Image (cartoon, rainbow, N blue to C red; front, side, top):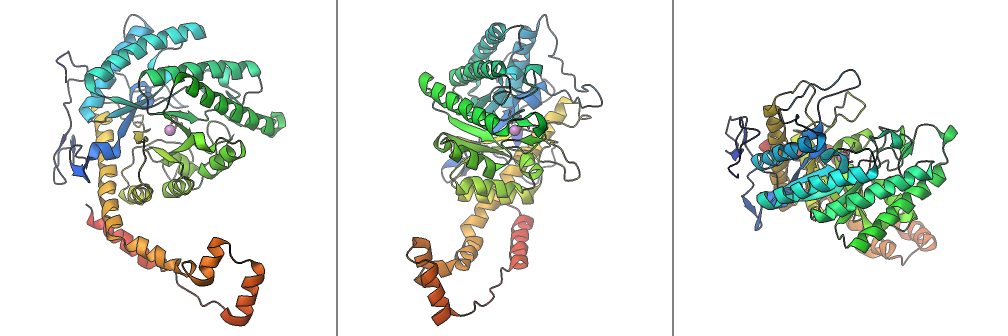
Amino acid sequence: MKKTKQLIPSVGTVAYEGPKSENPLAFKHYNPDELFDGKTMAEHMRFSIAYWHSFRGVGSDPFGPGTIVRPWESGKDAVSVALKRMDAAFEFFQKIRAPFWCFHDRDIAPEGKSLAESNRNLDKIVAHAKQLQKATGMKLLWGTANLFSNPRFMCGASTNPDAHVFAYAAAQVKKALEVTLELGGENYVFWGGREGYDTLLNTDLGREQDHLATFLQMAVDYAKAIGFKGQFLIEPKPKEPTKHQYDFDCATCIGFLGTYGLSKHFKLNIETNHATLAGHSFQHEIEVAAAASMLGSIDANSGDMLLGWDTDQFNTDTRELTLAMVSILRAGGLGSGGFNFDAKLRRASTDIDDLFYAHVGGFDAYALAFKIARRILADGKFDEYVANRYASYDSGFGADIESGKVGFKELEKLVLTKLGEPKPKSGHQEYLENLFAQYVNNGA
Ligand code: XUL
Ligand code: CO
């Protein structure tokens, strides 16, 4: 770290101490410099910090105001506070040893009285971020625009019934794309904030979906015009804030992008808590995206199975994460994506140490899952089981089905003259679950 006055003097750089360490502020599994197949763990995992939760989250909820007070949150005006806050953020990024960060435009810079003033504020903060990135080697995983907090977006942004709001949102994303490019962002995310509806009594669903597609096409066109080559990502979520979000889950997004001819420009940013809100497992969403070659990035967090909303907690569930890592590694990894910790402290976790504990636990859980998943894939037992389960399609009439050589007529004849009744074949679920549990229980 550069020898300037520290804003978080109570905690130093987090060290890797190995699985036996009892130090709560040390990594037990995340060893950023350890090599796996010639790449460091940091390069494999591409961990990222979410600016909005870690540096703008104050612990407020619908029943009460914020509880979390940071010493850098005061100064002569909003822009100077934003600059100081960013210094604290980069100090944290380095101490927690995350190579990437992510932001919304309005997280990093205060919204002004006009779009022009907001843009000027953003330019000042982005210049500072660029300098800090250069000094620390930190990189931007993705940028995005906040098109959901300001009251002007109460009925949506690109799906707003008022074309004036659509135009405003377009102007805001134009600027967000420019600053993401300026900071070397490797991806750009569209989470459909309020792109959905609460009642069909006032909503033209078809027209709103057309507008959302038009908006995404405009973003694709503008990225091309300015030379932004990062990956566009859609982040599915089924509900909250609106009752029904258009980007409900991965399958819905894949269908939507296909319908509007946008598939080749987008991949998916899958968030664990959004998957479970949609009634899916995290692994299911990863597999759906991977099957369509649209696995882009991960928003790493977890929900609470006893609550029906997006609690955005840090995930320490080795079992859930190992299942996810198996699917991610099998699909060939995340490419330009990474694991962005879109997770926040609980309202009563008010110490700065809590921010460190949270990320230490989250990083370690993913690192452990990465190691177990690598072992599972290297052993190949599940892959072999699945390959055998589908082996009847590898030759004979099964191969003819897959290649389209036979149709209903030929298959009917085959059943009537040769095949007869199929014999039951067990799926051995319990055997496989026990095998998986053994891998998880044995750890790295
Ligand atoms: C909201 C959410 C967002 C997106 C970025 O649930 O996950 O923070 O990740 O807009
Ligand atoms: Co998210």
